[in-house]
Image 1 (tube, rainbow, N blue to C red):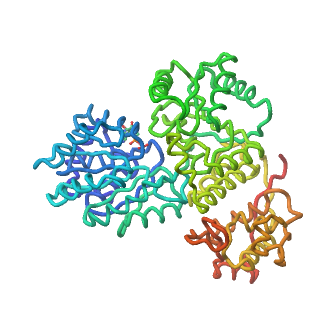
Image 2 (tube, rainbow, N blue to C red; image 1 turned 180 degrees about the vertical axis):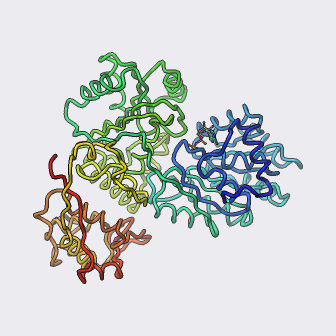
Image 3 (cartoon, helix red, strand yellow; image 1 turned 90 degrees about the vertical axis):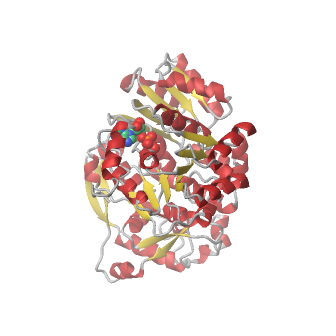
Length: 554
Ligand code: ADP
């Protein structure tokens, strides 16, 4: 798809310069554009700031007809419309918050013989709830004016993702109604199972997938034990490393945001807070102050972030535990967009885990940019979603508690990416502090874990297997009678975190396969472990040994 000899190549290059002011294409942009313009369904995984918008805005300029864009947030849409307006590209948006007369006017323009818009942005609930919009789209389609459908932030379709939004599930109707219109699904965050789920839910056909590395070499990662002096530590860290520079501090609750901001102000920082309870004008004001460097530090819930494009964010601090590795990666991704070095520091305590877990189960945790009302809707969390969220959180805990493995490796494994930890170049706390390694043979532990997965019927999540291996007598373990398995408690004596490291390693080595599970057999788990018999054979026949690195001096 890189080839520069498509019929539209010259026109693309000319418009990329003339309309968008770009002198070249970034990684995968040309490929994605060629694939979607050839009429294929395309799934794009590109990190935040990678330049996803161009992959549909440029084709929209070059092709006749209308591009329909589904985007989750009105604020994101307004930002896009403003940029398009500045570039003289006719675009409009429809949302439930608009005056009815305003909506009517846009819908009328769509039904006129010549549709004057190149792009129409809508929120997913518009597609889910407006028959009228669907009728307009049908009419455009009949007139061969519906050129392309773009699903932005496509991971929101999947219940396995970290940011599931029920209205996104209704988008499957688009491919059913318009099977010949190419769909372009875009996201900055999706694991292999989320990708599969999105492709299935949207009904994409023979989909072409583009993905690029999620490694951000200019971000420095560390996890620091959280104590009562956390805010003093943060104050010191900023003064020593990023004084007067721009940064975000992610906090768990609205009260935390206000408290942290106030304490930092007392320490002499230009800090402000941002969360979902503030009215939109207040939020916009704070965001503007920050963009203009009138305020350096924003203490925010995850409601702050989507669509923010400040290039010189020098640090992202997590004052408490993020909900998932995907969320964490995305939040950190807001630092260092200019390619310069930036710090990502996470303050971790086990008590925060308990707190986040409770908030998730009560549905009172703030999601990225959702209004409180919508939060409550999501709180009607089905058991399965709750289980997914809990499992995502447990993975975050094991990330924090791992004080051996390269942080980049741990994050990238999660996105199904292979990474050679020697190329981290000591840009994470673990690689930095560990001077030398010894390799330890963990083959016996590996065999026991594989055996245990089989004994438990290949129906359990990794978190469950680890619990049984460590000898847990939790209600859940007992409910399935797993306390009677011969390997229950076999890993009791192992140092903390070791079994989970071995288990993760078995998944990356493909000895165990994580499969998305759609029905509830053992409780409501989101992914279950199965044994790859072929690879397991090598392990049990003695042809394969499993080695893991351990620090020889810390
Ligand atoms: P994403 O949606 O992937 O987070 P955006 O589409 O918002 O990223 O693009 C991020 C920034 O990169 C924008 O400021 C955009 O103008 C710029 N950009 C995108 N493509 C190019 C390009 N080919 N050359 C230069 N700048 C680009």
